[in-house]
Image 1 (tube, protein in one colour):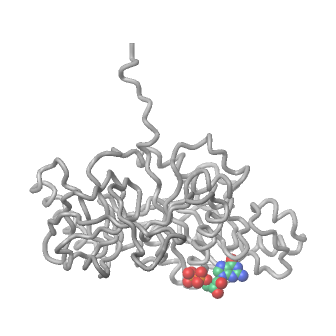
Image 2: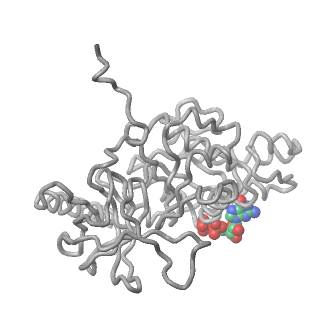
Length: 362
Ligand code: GDP
């Protein structure tokens, strides 16, 4: 008798969690993103990995291929992970969504040799204040003297292949990081000992250079998202899009454009949108939605291809008139069948919130 009120949800209404990478300079943020992208390209059949504007989507089937036994795709209904391509605090703090941080989840990269550094502490503080769930990637494990490299292997396999001396050196560094986290008020442990990732921070030993531990990193991110963030990922897939401006850019043939990360709903090539501006919300009509053209197809014409519609979570370039005043970090909302006044009001309120937050930080 409850058939008509079935609670089963259409899995396509679950969006990809948005992942940010933070950490001290030179600890390996860019290398880690490159490694994940690179592995995804190698594992993917043609077109499996999708390069977005400002972000990289790694679909569940590719994660499962990279992670092997650690990720059984049948255990998940989230579609994958969307990595923001620009690592670092700046992009993390400027990129907000209505609830706080734009990123749903973060990776804090710490060099195992260098340990905690000033920007590691800053990043922790930002994660704490924004209440963003995160894991720690204890990076550069391949630099432990005597390390025996096992490319792209899960951590337990490569651990087993190390001498006792080497593995205890690594353990020492890892426990130092765990101790530092505890000093900052985070209860942490090696990820395979963590039962509840909401209460404890998991530490994943990795090498962005050799790919060791990357299967574990992806598996933990995927597991944490599926277990604790599924409800937040439920979106109205056909609703009016909501996003955040990553960057404002002049683009040949298109004038001023905004690169946005869409975290809810869809944006279409004929939508009216409201974009946060320096002074007031900008109301404008989308002229084109642009995605990077796959590398193989790049000829002399354009680096971009036009698409009719994009659904969250995604990175997309929006070409539209009057974007001169648009700001990085500002909200973007699709009007569609809603009242324009109401949407302008929402964007204005979000802009006011951003101004207050920025003042707090200064
Ligand atoms: P970022 O400033 O945090 O983005 O750090 P980068 O990714 O630019 O890395 C800084 C340096 O560390 C570069 O020379 C990288 O090649 C090197 N590096 C990063 N990850 C690893 C790693 O896992 N192992 C080794 N041996 N070197 C690494």
